Amino acid sequence: MTLLKNLMAPPLSVLVVIVNYRTPSLVVECLRSLKDEVLDHPGAQVMVVDNDSRDGSPDYITNAISSEGWSSWARVLSSPINGGFSFGNNFAIRTSLSSELKPDCFWLLNPDTIVLPGALKGLTTFLTKNPEAGICGGGINEQDNTPWPFAFRFPSIISELERGLGLGLASRLLKPWMVRRQMLDVPERVDWVCGASMMVRSEVFQRVGLMDEDYFLYFEETDFCLKAQRAGFQCWYVPESRVVHIAGQSTGVTSKTTTPKRLPGYWFDSRRRYFVKNHGRVYAMLTDLVWMLAFTFGRFRRWLQRKPDNDPPHYLADFFRNSSIRKSSIRGGVLSEKS
Image (cartoon, rainbow, N blue to C red; front, top):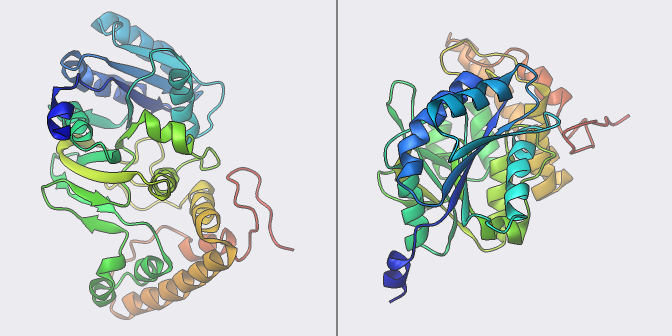
């Protein structure tokens, strides 16, 4: 009876939030791919937040919206600062939740995505049929449209051991704890989903709060999904909804078409914040120590085997310099070091 009632309910109203930082042409292509999805879904709107790009992005995107005839469903909101991914999304979410016409859910979508047909409907249909789900994420395709069938487990000291070693045998033995989890072509409950395409019920934000703005970039969706899970909300992977993701366009960090770049400080800040905030300083320090020892051993093993070096430059030194062993602050801004 409950399922029948849900199926007969009107479509969930959706606000699609796209945070831009100096990728206006990608945003326009993303909007172009969203057009049919939004027009086929009553109550869907799109808000592009420009994170203080200072490159003419707001005008470029606004002009495209006007010239393409998208003004009835898309608009641009300019942020006064570049506060990061969480800040940009919260800027739109906070504005919408305070309005009389707040949406039933928010679809957080990266600017470097192309929405494939049925992606919006796939997520809203799943949430309609599964009221216990508070968060769901779609499947990701590579730039060449090859499926990338992964969702994720929450990071732990064991997953960091596996990640540090980077060895085939260790990865097979520690597979149940690996963060990256290969998915089947059916909906499955998971710990967290990729923030490139993540739909969240308004109720989740209203109960657990907005995303943590002390994460500038990376780990923010992991932290938010953990907070939601602790509040009793489920997170699901929904492969019926798919987007093409051109990774690393704003930062270059996760790009798969270039050689590895040195990781920025905010990546280490976000990782440190996640472990200290959610598991405590002692656990975070032990986790950092385990990773460094495992990484050193794994790197030496790869050197002996004459395997190629695919690690970011200065990885171990940067990791130690920014680890919870050396830094006591978990904020993403000004960081304090132990004397």
